[in-house]
Image (tube, rainbow, N blue to C red; front, side):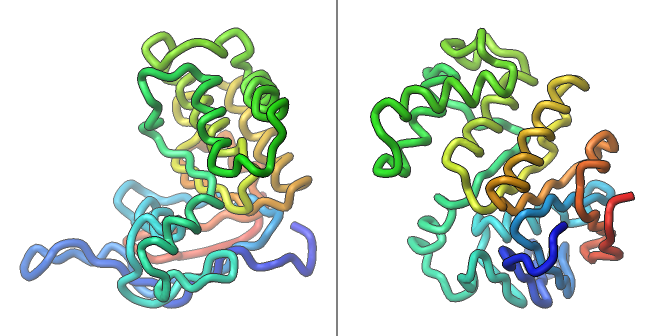
Length: 234
């Protein structure tokens, strides 16, 4: 990680609780951390430790309950629902369940995502960028394939391409390589590393996959809703 990087995410005393009354369960307690532009941070910990909940809070997919999170200079606790929705357009999300439209091909999925920032691109770019992205992900022969004709790993790579196509400043990934073989996983991590180095994207990855730890600039360990340790990758 380079020195004097801009802060992309800053969390202060973040708490979160599910349920009410006797069913209430605290899943996050007093978490503080900072994520910088141009770095890849991997978050590890056992299932149920609060990793995914924290990821969705950072992504403005849940309302802040306790503490505060600033994302790209905006305090999430002060944003309205419509403002959070606008912020999410600048975040690339990669989730395990893919969330692909069954009626759309891989190429069409990325073309649709580019419509969020239609004014950024020429008509030629709106056609060429999805193809280039899918080829980088090893899906050059699957451009016109719909989800029913894609393997789980291929669907995951389409979802990754969708998350990256608009060059977001912040990328949040939940187990992005879990469904991928070694070669595909390496391609994905190389692409994420490139985004961090060349585009100064901030990338937070929640994972149980030990194969990708070496790509991280820092590793955050969570247990029982709290960050235990944060340090450089070894």
